[in-house]
Structure formats: structure tokens, C-alpha cells
Length: 553
Ligand code: N01
Image (cartoon, rainbow, N blue to C red; front, side, top):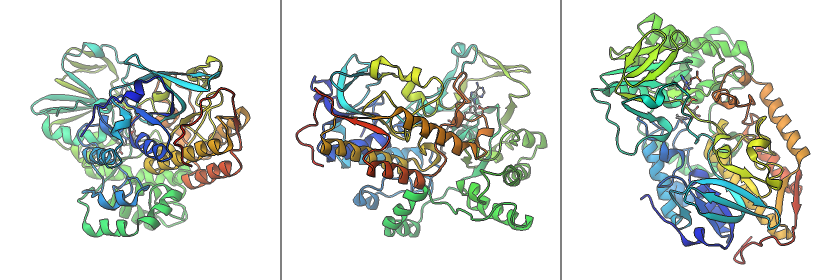
């Protein structure tokens, strides 16, 4: 299924209408959409196949924590009716299969160039053109660039002394080998207990002779209660997709959003509600009450409920306490959804190594040395996360007007208007980047909204005879301020999370996603468009490359 297409147009000198970077959910839909407008559009993709994060994340247990019936494209009814999901929460392989199906169904591969990493993108003001350079030494020019590079795609390998001296196998969850990794009979260490680590740990523990879990910060982990998707559920969704998708555009993912505060109800009612949601499984737990993200005391009740469950599951009280998060409010680091996670610590072949008590001093050829002991390992798994939201963009040398580097412009944190465009970088669109709801909502919903907006915007420019669009600095400043002010009203800034860049040494501490909700955000984007792209500068620059003659608005 995975192609190796190397289309001639991507190597040709003729500028494209649009260059799309990345062939995950965002890039595939952008290609569909722009091609549907009659534009010449090409995708450059680093992987050997489509799928983005679902191409790279092949670690054991990798699956989505948004329910399958919701984590899919809505733009084509035939597609959503014909695809069958088999589990409540789809495993990575099935999502990758779905994206390959989409690529085939819409004949997308002929415009995707695989195994091609974009290393630089420079803007030529005189020609109003972007030129991308790739790791294959090619150059591709285009009028518009759609950065479909993913929010959690730049894997972060920590600066642990001696890491490169480790003599065994070492794998990052976000860049997992394509051949199966055999843990049978091996001594395995895993560093990191975020969403990736907590999914992999129970499955690795079933195979390894011994598993050492190196935990720096315990997370809140709610049970997934994954199960086979029954036909009645599938029918319910498929029969009502128009209505469901309409609602999803307002709320992102369907949860039971409560209209009550946690402290407005009796303790007994509160416990019943937490218990019910814990039993049903999934992220729905954090929506038990409407003030979990807003009120510290309300949040404490949910946090204490989870800690009590941990004490109830984990037999060794010292291990239970070490697994209990106490340094951040529940949900302010991305809530983790797992299967048999806490139960795994009752196994004889699993040891929790609390790094706050015994920090890692070095990785040695034989394993991991902490302040207290040396753990001999055959395999080391790094579940250490991502340089989120900005990493994939800033790892490229992106330069806008006057040669200004994006890295320099964003040195104090990402700045843009609506998360979509940054001043000084005309015609460069970012899909689900910082400043948009992005990772806080169902990514597929956010992606479709952004791509639709971008396509409409390009259509508008064409209709008006304009060549470029660019954020106004003042409008951008106001949006950045608004994004920060919204986050400031929540408990999110209280955690050292990747939402704030706190996992990357030296990264500015700025809350990056927009917390105002996808419905509100969508209305704001639509209003801006309806007012002729208020806050943006639209211009007709002499000498600019015009859209391909095939363009059909
Ligand atoms: O990464 P993370 P992830 N020494 O950053 C630890 C999405 N996702 O790949 O918390 C020791 O959350 C770090 O410790 P600390 C989802 O949005 C979704 O797990 O910084 N430890 C932490 O425990 C998710 O939030 C799904 O103290 C070090 C861990 O590594 C996001 O991706 C599945 C360390 C990193 O956790 C990222 O999740 C998977 C060091 N030097 C991912 N450096 C689903 O849909 C880092 N750590 C279910």
C-alpha cells in the first residue's frame, strides 16, 4: 500500500500553486481539497508512506483515545459509510490502514513525493514565491505553502549523558521500527510515562523478562475500557453522521459535558458521577463537572478520586503512592487513557523506578545508572515525547520577508493570527498549529476546519485578483494576547506540560493551544473571512505567479 512515488512535477522548475508539507490527516485532506479546486498541489513527505504520526508511532499498544467513530474524516459521506472500524478506540495499524485507504480512494499518491524531508523554505518577495529545499537536494517552488507538519511529530530524544553509548537496542516511541520489536526474555527499560509510555508498558511487561519503568512525573491515567465495536453502535453513528458531524464541529469530540460544578453537588453524588465515568472509560472522565479545568478545589476532588483508585488497584502502598500524581491538577498535563496500566505494577517482573528519588545519572553501555543503582538492560525505550506544536516547523529553516527566520521571530514563543498565519510570512498557512484549538480537540475536526478555511481563502484571493495574504502584526499581537488570556483563566498554566513547552529545555514557557473551544474558534475564523479577511493584508504584487488556469472556484 505504501507508495514510493516520485512525481516529475515535484522536481520540475514550474512553480506549483500549492506545496503541502506532510502526508498525515492534514496533508491528505489539503491535497484532496486543493486538487478539487483545480490547483496544482503536491505533498512532500518524509516517511515512506502516508499517515504522519500514525506512520511513525508503531510502538506496542499505540491507539487513539478519541473514539473511532469520531476520529475520521467527515468530508465525504461515501468514505465515512464504507469504512468499518473494529474497536471502540482504533489501534494504530487500523488508523494507518484507513489513511492508506483514503490515499487510494482519492488517488492521492500520484501527487505525493515520499521519503523527502523539507529542510528549508525561503520566501522570494519579488516573485511572491516560496521555495522549499529537501534533504534530497531538490528545490520546489510554490505560491502557497500548507504546513501540515503535525502538532506532535518532532520526537524529542532527551539529553541523557551516555545515551549514545548504550550497547542494546534503543527505540523512541515516536520513531518506532517497522519490523516487530521482540521483547521476549529481555530486560527492558522505558523512560517516560505520558500517553505513549503508559500504552506501551502493559504490553511490554507481558513479554519482557523484566521491565523497569523510569518515571519522572506520575500522570493521571483513566481506563480506556476499549472493546470490540458492535454493529448497533456503528449503525447508530453511520445513520446519524450528518447530525453528529454538525455537533462535532461545535464541540470537537462528543463527551457528556456537565452543566454542574464539582462542589455544587454532594460528596455522594460526586463520587457516583466519577465512578460511573471511570467505569465507562475514556477522556469523558475529565468532563464529569464543568469546573475541573477552572477551579483548583473542584479539580482536587477528581484528582483524589483517581489517587484512591490507584491505591485500590496497586497492592504495594509505596508503589501506589509513587504512581499518584500530586504536582499538577488533573487534566493540565494531557490526561492519559490506558488499559491495565496500574494493574501492571502488581506484576513480579515490573519495577517502578521513581526518578524524583533517584535521578538518572547516565546511560551506560549496560543500562541506566541512577543515583541509587545501575539497571542492566537489553532494550531501552524512550517514551519521552515531542517538541510539541512548534518543533516540526522550527526544525526547518523557514524564512519570510527580508530573510527573517521563523525561529528568530518565535524565539519568545509562537506568534500568529488565529494560529493560521504569521506576520512576515505571506501565503504560508499552518494547519492546527499553536494559537488554534489543535491538540485540545479531536484533531481531525480541527484539521478539516483549517483546511476548509485555507481553501476558501485561496479561492477568495483568486476571485479578487489578489496574490498574497499575510497577517497584520497588530492583529497577530491581539490574537496572541487573547490566546494567553484565555489560558490564564484555566488551571493549565499550573502544570509543567508540553502544552507550555516545559518539556524542552530553553523553550519559552507559553501556553500554545487555544483553549476557547473549537466552536467559538470556528465562528471567529468564519467572521474574519466574512469581513474580507479582517486582520490580514491582501495584496496584488506585481510579478506574482498566478494560479493555474484550471482553477475552479
Ligand atoms: O509524551 P509526553 P508522549 N528523563 O511528553 C518523560 C499524544 N499521544 O509521547 O512529565 C526522564 O506526554 C516525561 O516526564 P515529565 C498525546 O497528546 C496520544 O507520551 O516531563 N523522563 C513524560 O513522562 C500526548 O500527550 C496518544 O517529568 C523524561 C514522558 O517522558 C502526546 O502525544 C498516544 C525525560 C513524555 O510524555 C505526547 O505523549 C500517544 C527525561 N530526560 C501520544 N524527558 C493517544 O491518543 C521526558 N521524560 C492515546
